[in-house]
Image (cartoon, rainbow, N blue to C red):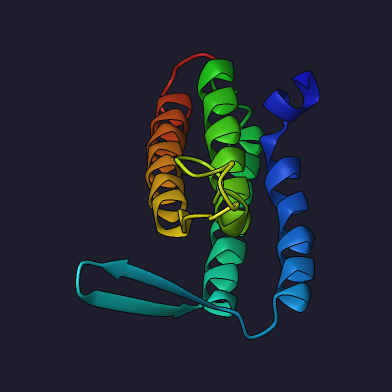
Length: 146
């Protein structure tokens, strides 16, 4: 765990092959998000490419910090990695959370569709993780200690 906090670039570079593997498994899947009467259709492959690009940029920036002999703040790095992992897992398991909030769970196993709520929670956690990352990066970059 301490190596994960001291070298977070390895974690983010390690996520890239995992996402590529998920891309092979989830071929041609479309995510449908509805807000009231508006439906947004997103192909999962475009989101996977976005995640790959984002994790490469995050990994390179953490590598840049270590190259400049600047240490990232441990607690901010830990929060960033935890929030990013939780958001990532929630997003890719969005259809597995349908049992939450169902009042008739024991009556005929009539499941509700909570995938939109899980996607929104995942996006909010993802944005929060990005704020922790940006704050951590610039705080570490401009700190005077090496």
